[in-house]
Amino acid sequence: MRDPRVIVPFGKPVDADVQVVGSKSYTNRALVIAALARGDSELTGALFSDDTRFMSEALRALGVDVQADEAARVLRVRGVAGHVPALTARCFVGNAGTAARFLPVVMALGRGVYEIDGVARMRERPIGPLVGALTRLGVQVEALEKPDCFPLRVHGGSLQGGRVSIAGHVSSQYVSGLMMGGPAMPRGLTVEIDGDLVSRPYVEMTAQAMRDFGAHVDRDGERCFVIHGDPLYAGRRYRVEPDASAASYFFAAAAITGGRVRVEGLGTRSLQGDRGFAHILARMGCEVLEGEDFTEVRGARDGGGLRGVEVDMADLSDVAQTLAVVAPFASSPTRVTGIGFIRAKETDRVAAVVRELTRLGIAATEEKDGFVVHPGRPGAGAVDTYDDHRMAMSFALLGLQHPGIAIRNPACVSKTFPDFFERLEALRR
Image (cartoon, rainbow, N blue to C red; front, side, top):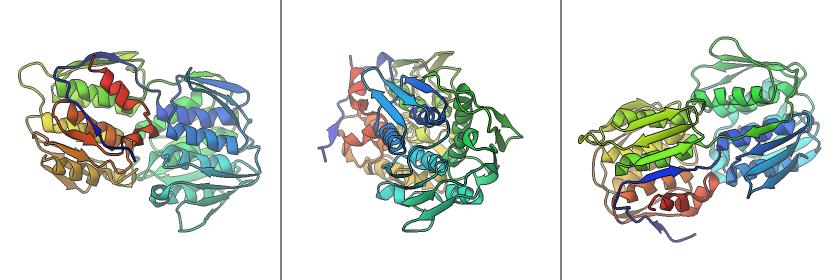
């Protein structure tokens, strides 16, 4: 493991136009859809990170031709027209949640027997709702060690489609994985969401990406998606937009330092829920400018500085940690609710946030579905990241204003943003 990375304070407000990496969510959705399509696809602006490499490698193991041009940020995919070529495959997805929740559906579309596994933490993360839904659709899925946990063995050859319900309160990725397989099922697929749906914008992103590749996706009320079995996806050239979760760290840098950051390619046309982080910063006192293809955040300059907020982040939980490190710079407490489900992410993100802020001298308390962070000045210290990329990237921001902040295991950012620290350092110029 590398030595901790020490963050050197900037000493002045940031003022930068920033290019962030391509959206992980859209890249992995586009990879699955392009793989199932008729014809070839070219994905431009794609993200190259651990999560997207695990997805690409798994698709290759299933017989899909995926070619990567990392320098050009392009992925080329030869579609298999809904028919998985391989009859056997063993796929490893690390701790990539999208790959883990999308690939079992792709495997079920094949005619062979396939195994999927991940790191130790992935074996703890819930997969039971997806296993149950596939089982109700007639697919044989075996849990090879513990019930409803990785590793899994998926038997293909029986997935015809139909109607299925699935709980929405654990992860939206189960819903998205089922939806994307729908156009390759002879009977199509109707997905009913049972109960509340967390991270709802991600399901809307899935539907958008599916339509972009020619699928017919209809709504039947708020909790039901109807996916037609014909037409199948058609290969195309597809632009992956910038990642809103990644952009949040740079918007936060503007808020913390009282500076300005503009991200091109990410604006009002985007469906990414995490773009709403900028709107939370506006409530805290920042100025936010938006167009169809850009978002700019300017730190509070009205003399009053940042103020605390109370906010439900169920639809943008991946940026809850980013808000947690902006909160100490506000003049009043910040309370985040609606995110109890992120305890089952790469780490227990609620507990980890509170633990690390407290260790740095910031008053923070853990609640069942969120946390409260009080104003304060963080002291020097090394932050444990729990092999969670978002812990590393968010807590690094504390060091922009205060000396002595170090990030343990900084390499974990390779999961979604391999050159994050280099891009953060570039703001100093």
